[in-house]
Length: 336
Ligand code: AMP
Ligand code: TRP
Image (cartoon, rainbow, N blue to C red; front, side, top):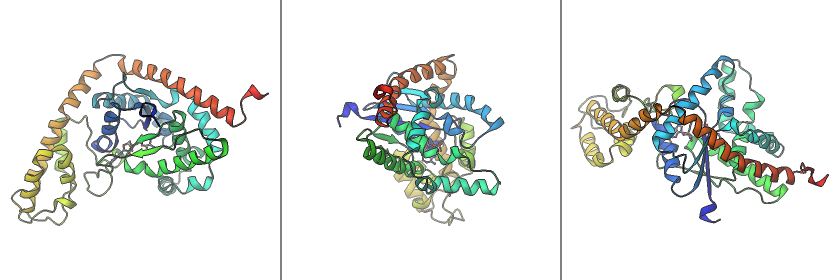
């Protein structure tokens, strides 16, 4: 397919402020891809409802705003890309229903994130909703509605994309070539571990550092990070290859990498100093981001206007795709 026609789509649930893992795993790629492709970025508020209900949903609107500010500060440019909120283009929910007709239930039950959620919910004696089972179908609808080829995400989303490809193949087989098979695009850091050094960095596990954290917060949080578990005494040599702090140095201190490696493995530097260096690197790298974010916060109405305009532009594409799908699936009145 022609370069000009290649389209990028990705989304994030409105969970509020983003962390380093979101940036290194996905958002950094989103920004870079804008230079080459037609990009569409979506805040998926309907997906948020798969694991929150009642009172908790009051957080959705403030979270959308916080997330949009992070995107803008990171360099997502509404002049280049379409930025919108999922529910503002409700066509996606119709496409989800239609794609649901060609998606075997067995495929959905096998998705690892679904199995994890079911396990978690059974612990709290909560129910598994119909909406939760349909999470990957809605995600597929997001991507297909815009006929995207490339989907920049972190590693945890790869199984979802595999399923999206299977649904796409099945649709194309039943109704004729309609959608490109979407492909996940990973960064050099597809899975960033949290401060615990064990699980993926995640807001819900509180093992994260926010992009928008203050320099002091960043320093305090980095100070709690786990390093090489076998390095018990200051005089023990460290093993950077198993140390999450070192992984983060690779991004935040690229020009001091050799020095850090050398001084850590020869025990010239302890973990306290190592973490201080990392915090400095993070603060230095993120200062322009934080500055732009402060500036964006001050621009009244900017986020709303961007999202309104984004939804308008996205809807033009969405309606065209949906008309084609309705026609192919026998729902178009033209044949009446
Ligand atoms: P989430 O906030 O979990 O919905 O994730 C939003 C995007 O960031 C998705 O593309 C994720 O794959 C990516 N992401 C989230 N956490 C991490 C992490 N710890 N490392 C790398 N990528 C991540
Ligand atoms: N499931 C994704 C996440 O949790 C969010 C998402 C929804 C998404 N729809 C999408 C990502 C479409 C890429 C493409 O991060």
